[in-house]
Length: 134
Ligand code: MN
Image (cartoon, rainbow, N blue to C red; front, side, top):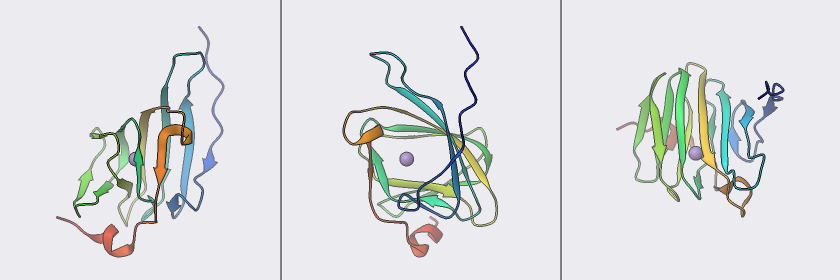
């Protein structure tokens, strides 16, 4: 047993995110057979992912701020600290901060081989899709 080195904080790439997003990879597979990943992701107000899907699904746990999460059917849901949001394999979606506050979530997902991390990235989320609420 050991305490792991503190992971570096990296800026989320502009092709995958709108606005300022910072990521720390807390858990990554270490030995054959492990597939679990856990990241801490911090979004500036208004920042969000591009549209994407996860080959093996994703679980988000909101730790700070107000999260907005959208799906292709036009639904945008709001989640708060303590909420856990599951996205099934293959469902296209986005997640980010509300316009007026920072947001932090933990993101858990299983690695798949292709594409890297099992994430399929698509176009950025438009202002009108981001602002839509049901
Ligand atoms: Mn996702």
